Length: 110
Image (cartoon, rainbow, N blue to C red):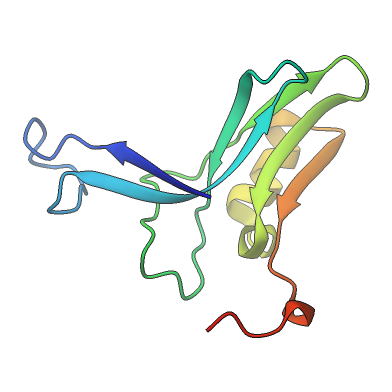
């Protein structure tokens, strides 16, 4: 899902902020059973996603559950790269990785 975030375009001249003053990230989110947002991950390795921005740094995002321990979040193409995938496994040591992926079997979206 898209996640639009403000960036420090006017307060930090060294920022990689786009000219419109906001980033738009491809995002994986997780909610608790009561609906509270517990984790938000922004995709780092984009693949033909011109409408999204790359976060300044790869993120290592996890959340804990009472039923299955620690989960890590990724999105599609990210799973093929050291950053963030191996970094997530080595540093955070999640029991399970939840990652979203587009299945080619779904047919063309374009």
